[in-house]
Structure formats: structure tokens, C-alpha cells
Image (cartoon, rainbow, N blue to C red; front, side, top):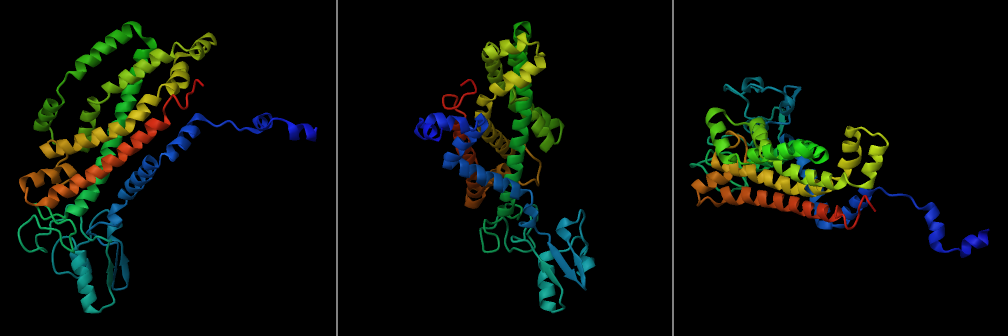
Length: 364
């Protein structure tokens, strides 16, 4: 028997011990081989996670204050510490950069631990910088200030979190609505499909910019309102992809087998057809995120986006157009936007290659 195994064809022996690999793991392995997209995915994901703890690294508020033997943690406090708590003779919130210098010069043993970049995104620095804003880049403010003397570097970093978060929320909601409606139209077809298609076509004819202008004249735009409006105008395209996939997949033998076994419609839709219909929209998702980031920047640039003083790339670019000679107001946010979008495009290209049905197919 051992001799037979030794002389047997290699494939016959290996097939017995071969472990089945899921199609997702195959696609993930393929995705990792596309280095440009894989490293871009790691970079964008890491930066996005770090952006949620950005106040620890970029903020005007101190991390720790040691005063008269007691410790305070202002950055983790929901409210503010009054200046008088630390012996400063003024009203309002304590100036922690100034407090740090006072403690250092007094030699009292008190100390202040500031973030790596001790400036906030909405902090007005007119009292600390000479001249009228916008101020050019300097050793203290590496990307200068905007027209209200706010640090451009801090606003750019905080704008990254807002842009990515906005795009992810809009894309997720649009996919949820589009996939649900597209699945219903494609699966039930007939009159439901015809009526649904006509409603979608009518809704798609609404002018997006006019709606934004009207809403902006009535309500103060905010993050949630903009998410709702943009989602309402971006879900239609997803329905066409899912509808077409459902029309193709519901004619397959595995769907006929599920029907013959008495499976419910919900089971056929969500357990059988939908997993085989997600490849196009998964490949399209990174490019949808790019489009939603660009839409937010465009709305902020036109003045119909997030309200001031929200850190926004579009608002910085708009200021740069008003102060065209202040190059940093345009160069910094545009560079941040370009690098972010090009990294997401690299991710999209890698996902598209990894999910190519010609390479790995569920039907194979």
C-alpha cells in the first residue's frame, strides 16, 4: 500500500488532502497581490481610524495638566475648564499653550502636556499672530492660516475625517436602498418592474442642484441633512445593476432548484440570488465613495454644504479662490483631496481585478 501511494500520481494523493477555499478568500488573496491597491487600502483605513482620535494629536486642548498636586485631563472632559481653575486671570476657557509657558517660567512644578500639534481646527489665532490673515506657512503653522486665522493644517486633517465619513454613510445608505429596490424589481418583474422603473425615471429627472438651493434657503444644512439629500439622489443607479443581475441569476438552475424545494421568496432573494449579484456593486463602491467625497467638496465650495466653522476642504478651496495669491489655501486642500481620491481609486482598481468573474466565479 505504501508503495502504491509512493508511485501514485501526485494529483491523486493531493486531492484527498486538498482543503476547499471560499471564493471570498480567493478574491482577498488576489486583492493582496495587487500591491498598489492593497497598500492604499491599509493606508486609508489606518488614517481613517486614527482620524477619530485626532484630538489627541491635533488640538488646542491639553492632554494632561498637573496643577498644585492635582491632575486634570481637559481633552477627555465633556465641558471646558475655566481659566481661573489654573490661576489665569481671564474669563472663559483656559489657554493651554499660554498656561504651559506660564508654568514653565514660574518654576512651580506644575506642567502641561499638549498634543503634538497644539492648534485646533476652529481656533481663531488673531491674538497670537501678527498681521492680517491669511498668514503664510511658518514653523508654528506649517500650512499657514485661512482668512479667519484658523490653522489650515488642523482644518485639513479634520476635513479628512468628515469627507470620508460622509462618503461612507451616503454610499452605505444608497446601496441599502438601491439594492433593496433593485432586488424587488428584478425578482418579481412584470408590472412591479414596469411601475418601479417609471417611478425611478421620474425621480431621476429632479435637478439635484436646484433641490439643494431650495433646501438651503429654507433649512440650515448640516451633516445629516446633506446625507439624506445626497442619498436620495444617488441610489437610483444601484437599482439598475441589481435589477439586471437578478434578471440574469433568477434563470439559473440553482434558483429553479430552490423554487422546486419550496423555498420562500425571501430565502431565494437574500440567501441564493443576492450573494451572486453583489460583484458589480462591490467593484463600483470605491468609485461611489470618490464621487460622494467630490460632491461634498463641491457643495462646500459653492456655499451649499456644511455650515461654518466646520472643517471642510471645499471651504478652504473657496477661500483660496478669494485669495488667489495665497497659494497654500488652494494647494493644501487640493493636495489632500487628490491623494485621498487617488488612493481610493487604486483600491477600486484592485477590487475590480480581484472580483473579476472571469478569474473567480461562484458558478465555477
